[in-house]
Length: 248
Image 1 (cartoon, rainbow, N blue to C red):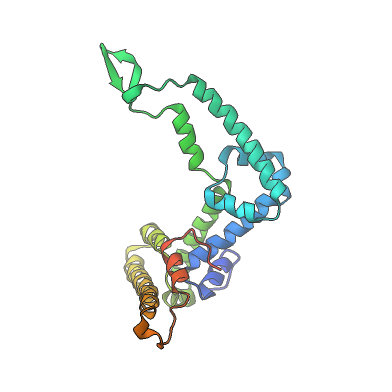
Image 2: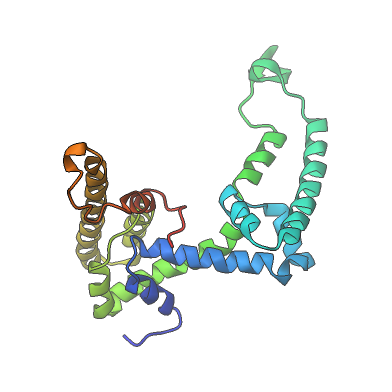
C-alpha cells in the first residue's frame, strides 16, 4: 500500500526497535503538544481559557516544568489557580456538608441518605480528570489506532511488520484488543487476535525472563556469567507495564 500522510507515523513507530510502538507514537504526540503548549500559544487568550479550565495531569505538568519556559508555566498556573480559587470558593460558600452523609432536609420525617456528591467535590473530581495535553493527544492517538487496523486490512507489508514487532505494553495491548471487534470483520478478527496475543505474551515473557536473569545475576554463583540482555531489563519492564513512561 502506498504510504499516505496518516500512515507515516504508524509505519515509523513500527519500524523502530521499541517495546511498544503505541507508546512511541504517544511520546511523540506528547512532546509536540508540550512544545505547542509552551510555545507562543500560551500567550493567546483562547488557549489560556482552555488551559485555565482543564489544567494539567501530574505527568504533563512535570514535562512542562522540565521545559525551559518557566515563565510560561508560571503564567498558566497562575491564571488556572485564579479561576480554580474563585469557582471553588463560590461552591464552598454554598455547600453544607452533613455528618454521616445525611442531607440537611428531612423526607417523610426522616433524614435521607446522601446519594450524590456535593458540587464542590464533583468540581474537584472533574478538575482531577482533565488535562489540556491529554485532550489534545487522545483523539490523534485514536486515529493512529484506527490506522493500524486499516493497514492490517490493506497492507500485507505492514501486517508482517506488526507480526514481527516487539509487542506492546499491557495498556496498549488491551486497547488494541478492545478496539479490534469494532474495526475488523469476523474473519479479520479471527486472524488478528491470535497474532496480537502471541506477540504480546511472547514479548512480555521475553522481558520478564531478562528481569529474572538480572535478579539471578546478583547471586554470587553467577558472578562470572554473561549479563545477556538483562542490563536494561528493568527499564524495558517498566515500559511493558506502565504506558505513562516515556521510552527514549
